[in-house]
Image (cartoon, rainbow, N blue to C red; front, side, top):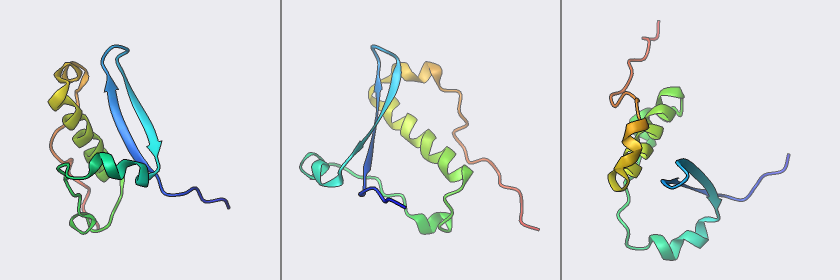
Length: 91
């Protein structure tokens, strides 16, 4: 099985065309741009290292909220729950 090199994901909202663009970039190419920029770490141990549906939902909501800070027009399309959705208890 072929394995691609590591990639970073860049997500942006193009207000003119009203679309989200996802781009894959080699991490080394981002270093000069991201040096000294505020970063928000997402600690996997706080999620018990479970990258499940709820984690993905919350990550997506966080990304949309981050975009909306600088481009509030996208909020008119957002109907997502801001709070975590209760997981069924393990029985």
